[in-house]
Image (cartoon, rainbow, N blue to C red):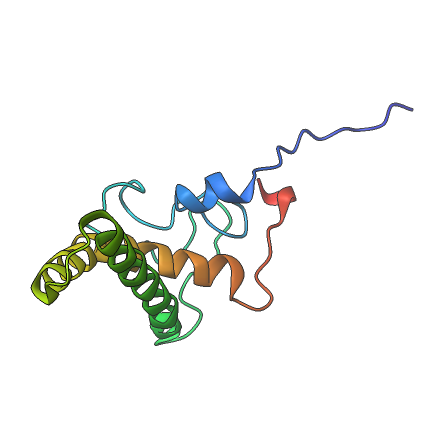
Length: 133
């Protein structure tokens, strides 16, 4: 008797996370538009491939604010250090303008990927299931 083989393709976590794919099957989309269409961040209610409902309960994504806060702190610290090293300026307005502009430009990125990190790494019981790929 010949053993049945199924060709399940293992999908690596980093490309799936960057391309905003479902954390359970890593095939279905989480957002209506592609990963780099940052100014229209409308989420799809559930995965079209495996049926995972992304928002477990009302207000589920409030926890993503903490991840977004960590993103903003990292961006502000990095930009502040970079301004200090590159310009050597002590002008506080230079720091304020550059840092706030950077946070404003990166806010769509922070919104999208804070939710993705919450789904991928901070949701208990939600794991990748390669048999669904």
